[in-house]
Image (tube, rainbow, N blue to C red; front, side, top):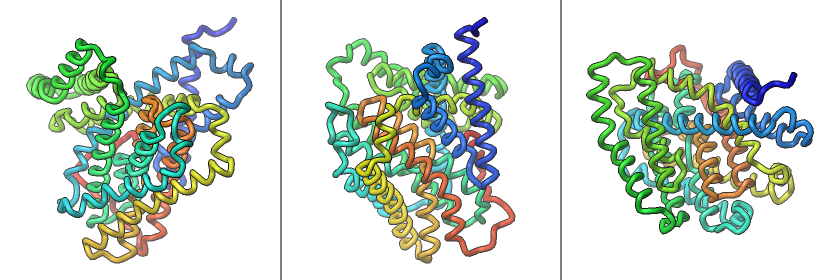
Length: 417
């Protein structure tokens, strides 16, 4: 007796979750963040399913199962972006306040270097019939990001003693990511035909954004002041993320941008460590499906194109620009603090961590048709490599004995990293 479509989809989802948990634990055993194993497993499983014969896919991944993975993964992406928004604001309060003249080059340099490196390959980064200018600009911005939640976890795992490197790294990362998301939003607005959006949609979207930014925070603070935190807070966070996502979706933009905005404006004083970890646990269950469905969205010929000479040349050049730009920022910021060359290089190594932020931004670019499948695959590969080498590279540059205690920034460590 054949399995029902719903049961088969749930079994496949359970396989994805179990596999990601297992590989994530293996990653932890080799001193890597669990998210590196989750990303690797999801992308590898999606690639294998995509490369499998049609007869196998018809049995293992029928249309209903694929739709379930996509829907679950999409939900996980929105929750992840909501968490990124919350953590951008949380970690912006960590470390020393830096003068603006120091932060501006740290933000601008990676974007400019990434843009210069991507310019010769603009025709490869765009969809057929798309605008190479926007693809080039998007990749330049995407290469500049640092995954703030994953970076915080790596800092904890490294057991770095309390000094200025972690604080400076987090502050630069927060500022860079905030600017990057603002620029990506501007690119999406520039490529969207606003005339095709009805007046009713504009009004509804505007009302939802006003509610997310101004109205809902005050209502939540009054409501939660009269009730105990717990499951109600997790439901409120989930609903808040959906309202923000709906706002930008109505405008015709990617809902992930609305989820980031919702995270930025969610009342920070209401978030407890328990509710934060509960929401992260839900995202942990959903996000592996996102990596699988992301890999399935990349055509087979695109994946093979990565290993051709021209594809490898593009990947090498952009990877060198991505690594080099962050080390340049580390040397500049370290020089302004009068740090040694080794200490400045350690800062650059930490800033190279791109993780899930790069994957989320790449997905937004692909689904918004700013970039093509090749650029998406390249950014995914870069996110995985840069995240995996961050901790080993930092250890290689560190000439001190390992610290006995991890730094305590006074904020919860992201559970979904």
